[in-house]
Image (tube, rainbow, N blue to C red; front, side):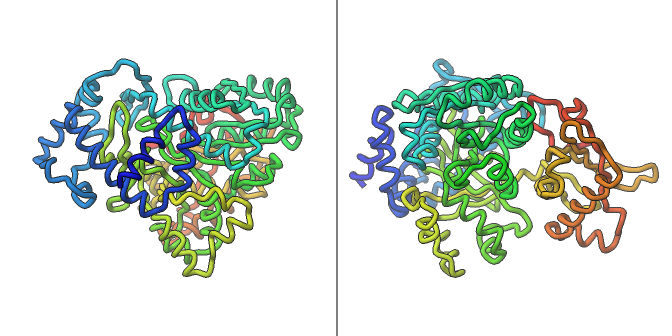
Length: 508
């Protein structure tokens, strides 16, 4: 254990990133178990001693902190969330030693609509840079390639834009030939940069919210930008997407290797960059689509494909309790067994290999054939579903956005709709429920009766295949569960105002 602790010290040496990556590569699963247990217990004790709000929270729950001596004890610590913890104490009582100075604040609004301000420190930004550099290291040539990073995340009070900028700023200081541009979600500035700067660099990394990046990619042709003349890598965050979405983007842009040239980040204002897709997690996700037995063994909901990422237990640690994802992470506002609001689960590295081996699939051999065996880390996986509060109901059946999103990615619809939509449950004059789906048309595309019928048919077929509750209702209620499709012009302000996150579900 002493050797491991010495390794941890090197692991967090911000001036010696090579030691960090060497350690990350060398740690085996059993060692992760040992050091993460030590880390969790120490963080709990330090938070109890130095954070007034957490001290009061533990005492208010009649929990005895001295009893926490093992990982089994740790799992008995009361769960925190926004309501019972973050919004129950003053902000200065949630941070170490009551100190808010030397921090950066990011705002988020919950269901109440009132903002909560999450402070973060230098450690969080450094951790984010390690995740981003991990992505760059999948291609060893990135150390020498001139690279234009276009950061399309919003640069206001939200975390995405600023933490992405800070991550790449730190990486550039490590002698990567990076140039950073921060237009935010301003398409005009993005296209101008691509036209005038794109060919000056050996590659471009486009960072942003998935639906927005798809808009940029789809609309680039109108600005005389040919993606296949530009070497492109893509960093997504803030939302899940389907593998059909990834395949569409990869084909449209001429990306040759989706495993090392695309990545989705699992992050939050709460704890920054928490976990990322790896080449292995992307491969697993693609294989799970093809093999329903593997999908069923790995994920608890057979009709839905979650985001699958790997996490570093010394940055943010995950566990699952009754399908609820709990995270623990160090920050100036530390969080212990925090229910972030996501549903999903945690899978050990060895269990993942075991499931595939039992089904006749050797993941390591496949990774070797695809050229990324050397980038496999024995890190645990966390999978996350879209939040259940981002759904609507139709005659009791839960309608999830991802099923509509999958439908709109059908190749027949590529030239007609952007893939953005807002759905809601309404009632007609006879008080009967119906599902309304508002869709954004591509520029210069007009609504037609045939298009309406094709879209409706594709959506219904996908819901019948993926949603057992909907299928059961359709057998009983027939056309009453067919959605009403409403088309809107491109970037219409009612549902598709540019610049912000798409609101997939509207609750009346």
